[in-house]
Image 1 (spheres, one colour):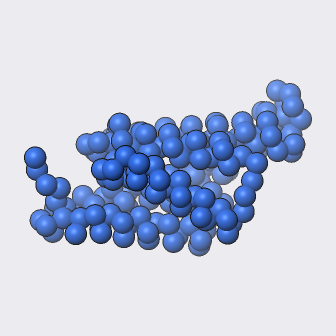
Image 2 (cartoon, rainbow, N blue to C red):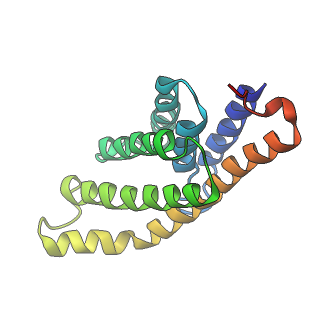
Length: 169
């Protein structure tokens, strides 16, 4: 029953990717952190967010920075596995911020390096990061909001529905 709740929460977050409120306001970073933290099978923890990205990218569009994006999502699952194995408000908040910053740095560097939109000099790199700041704000807000919903939702469910609590070993 617990695994069904986790899958259901992830599925709802994924569906919201198709109804963007703002550019880069997506649940997927939170889903990657949550998958790393709550999905016991290591392969599945990585496979779920990366598969979701790929399947939704088929419909939403492929781009030259996909490798950088997918690497960032793998990093987020890694963070979930290693830093959120026993999640706390502080750890979730920190992981959400670090994930958003790493994503911003890596993906915008990739856009600068591979898209051809910017000059290949320091001025072009600076402009790329500068123009991406509004998207970073949305990314950070979404990661914090969806992490709160996913991690908070499972914590509440475990507290008020005893059958959903993890099995103590």
